[in-house]
Length: 127
Image 1 (cartoon, helix red, strand yellow):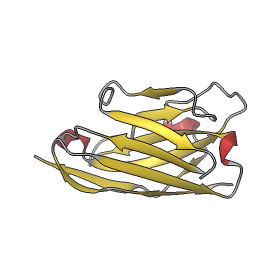
Image 2 (cartoon, rainbow, N blue to C red; image 1 turned 90 degrees about the vertical axis):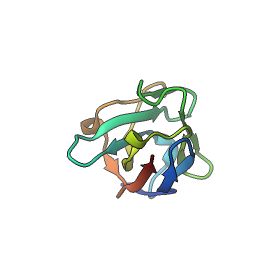
Image 3 (tube, helix red, strand yellow; image 1 turned 90 degrees about the horizontal axis):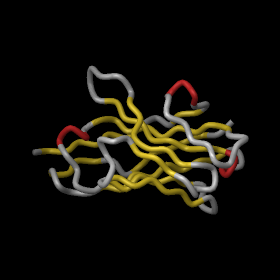
Image 4 (spheres, rainbow, N blue to C red; image 1 turned 120 degrees about the horizontal axis):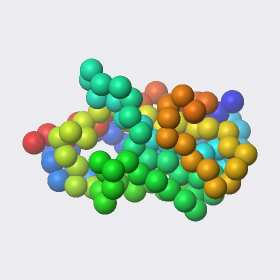
């Protein structure tokens, strides 16, 4: 089992930046593909970004491409989400998730595919 703890959320003005971190503990971090999701009030949890076990390949939702970047440091057991040019509609609780992955080149888009979740961190973007 792996435990995930997000940090770095907060209140920021539109156009600003935040970097979210997700620290993992418990098992070999490099065995997990990682993802970031978000959930706004009254909406379903949606995919934001994903990264393979090694960090060599990533993907982003169309709504955040060009503004967000996902990365990971396996030596630090941490995955990051750099968020630039934030918009009010980016306001949500952001969750990181981990999936045991036997394929080094795989990442995943659906919440139901992930095995472990963090508790979430609130991001609020004011206009």
